[in-house]
Length: 480
Image 1 (tube, rainbow, N blue to C red):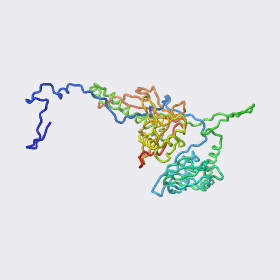
Image 2 (cartoon, rainbow, N blue to C red):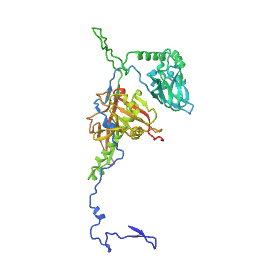
Image 3 (tube, rainbow, N blue to C red):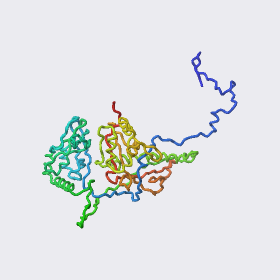
Image 4 (tube, one colour):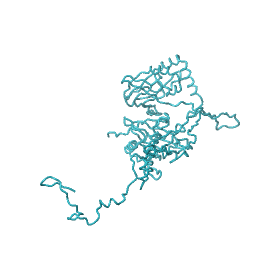
């Protein structure tokens, strides 16, 4: 240790209290002793390792053929999608014509020329907060596409009070219920809760296109006829049954019809090449195997990416493949107990909630405001926060958008419950973990050992209501 000399301002060494005045040591110094001592060390650490609750919560199905086919009953009711828009300035907003097939009445319509012409007839309209677009019982004179904003569907209750039916947000549409009716009327009222923008299409234009485009008229007629066929409450082709009868009536016959083109999920993959120098593998393997440690951290990174793909992949990830009929928006912005209850009520036997940690904190703040204390459940020895007995698992792979909103996912899991299942294949060559193998690729001329590390996986939603999403979850704090 050194201190500045007061006279000269230069540093001088202070004597070590363990060193005698004559500078001779009476015992071995600690610095010298460390040269012979074995340092106690940890394994290489990695900050990016998370709990990966989604991977732990999913039941995994062994897919021996490399693809998994989800067979379902014939679906007569067409599901809702969401259209997309392009914006070239504040006053030039257009719907992308090809996305109009996401509307139930245009699902599967092939004539892109007609779609482009329809897209040009939409008119942009700004809406102020509190403005009523239409009221229940009024004639349908326009169809609407929501570009931006939050709109509330409401109706008058039995005793004259206002009842909120639902929330309409970006990409949704209003007006398809008028197709096939001679005198269409709005079934509910719609009010803008925030300022927003909608694209409006006069209903007379729809009727004009129907007259001028025979292919569109035939498509809409087929849609109307399909909607009039007997179906159950989930929109599946009905099986005729009788109950409560007496005597010997003639029973109707029928069968359970299946979809002729069921969806197939092919296994996706995540790969990397692990490179280890032969000198490192040969000489520096004590007390820890360098190759094993490199492989351990590589596998951790692959598993992290695997969970990200199960959430965000456009082909099979949850955020992009949950049915739009199973998506709801928060009523006021932050995730409230009412929002969580509505999400929970949309399916039977919900097993899991997944949310970004900040979304969980936002939900707890809303509980605190109401004086509620969410419970906990024990999962694999961990006490996990829960709502109505359903665990709420943190999942940092769920993104937070630029406007500080996120999503909360609810899942029913398992094949037996027609839920969500993970897909993988076991027994693959040189398997290191289930569904993951490590294959030796040889040693190159630079004496580098190469290993190909691959994980095969996918995810399947067996029926639409197996998964649901609470969208537009605001995670920021609100001023008190």
